Amino acid sequence: MTVLAVDPGREKCGLAVVAPGRVLHREVLPRSQLAGRVAELVGRFAVEVVVVGDATGSQQVLRELSGLGRPVRLVPETGTTLQARRRYFQDNPPRGLARLLPEGLRVPPGPYDDYVAVLLAERFLAEAPRFDRNGGGSIE
Image (cartoon, rainbow, N blue to C red; front, top):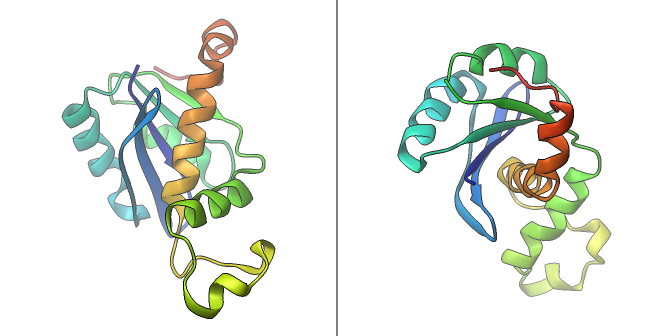
């Protein structure tokens, strides 16, 4: 199953296309470009399900994405910001003096909403049977 995940926000959004065990695409983009870019990625990667984090801006994003012809599901975002920060630094180890900072004080140099989107997709894939049974806040 290929999933496109959206970490919604007021100004920017994180996107990730994930298949089990693989991140196929990730990016951060302005909120105004979200709907068009999601439609493009759904076709490009044959996405089966779109998942949206349930925090800031999620209801508006759900409405915007309702016409995609794919199921759109809400996924809990609890704890993803700190997990995404850790994942970012696993992929981009700090260099120079920054590597001496304790992990909790490190902040990525730019937005890392795409890493949050990866975590949302992985969370959905790990719990997909539960979302199918309970609907998971879906719209179609």
